Image (cartoon, rainbow over all chains, first blue to last red; front, side, top):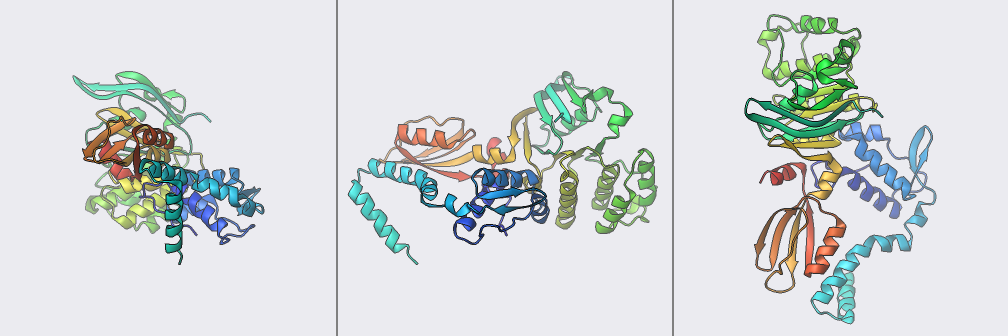
Length: 126
Length: 291
């Protein structure tokens, strides 16, 4: 289910966080879908279980996953709402902030920046 | 949860040579600690102090609540150890060697060891004298597993194992640690194994614990930075926790050890630079800490 690379500089729990968030947001993991248990995932990928538990706990706090007594964790029924607009905007916030700082340093105007973003948007459409 | 091992201010000198200095740590049940360090950094000495084989010259260490030098037999039997150099008896067969060790313990998991012998391709009828280094290493590991220790200490256990045997070994270690009741401390130069298995990392450098903490935090805090200014010359700035920095006109590359997103935002604003963060694998991190 996950593509995990222990040798990456990105900690495994972050790799799991990003993949679950993406798969839930895109509907690949609809509400109610069961996730593999921490133990199964650790043994299957030969990785430490704690980093997996950490990812699952964060996703639970975010409301994306639900813990069920004695059964595997599942994608929360409310998960869709959590990935609605404000949440997704919040995720891209730091990148926008960075871009705006850079644009100001380069003395670009707001109009010029917005125009450039629009151009990039159109070019990257597949 | 009580610590399996608690050490504070450990020091060890052999004559005038200071091998360990001011080493403090805790190991909790469920932890898998990966110990990294150059040859001669003090790894083996540290593990031997934990086992009570040698006294520290300063500081204190308790294992399951007992001073490591004064552990009673029932505490010692909760520990398993795989030494760097095996202590097998050449004239014995594998079966006899297993029997000898099993006889030291009140509880011995014969079923587990039988299963692992089969899975790992260890021939119980073979005489130890004729075995390869890798085969001897597998047997040493089995000898440390049989009494299902709550604290497993391994000193370079896999140096002579092929990649397939190493993976089988890692899988078994994971199975052992999966119940969250047992602690594992292992030193290895095979960084990719530590990267898979450990949740905590100790980096020993010149006898000191240069870095200790979660592997996840280690990867988040030690990063390589690619810094770009807006003009042709980079302004002067100070990077918090910088290990090294190389400036080249309007660019700079640096490695920092306490990096946070807040530090990045602060530096980008104050120095008018753009920073791209490159995360590093454990091997790169280890190398950077030794430059």
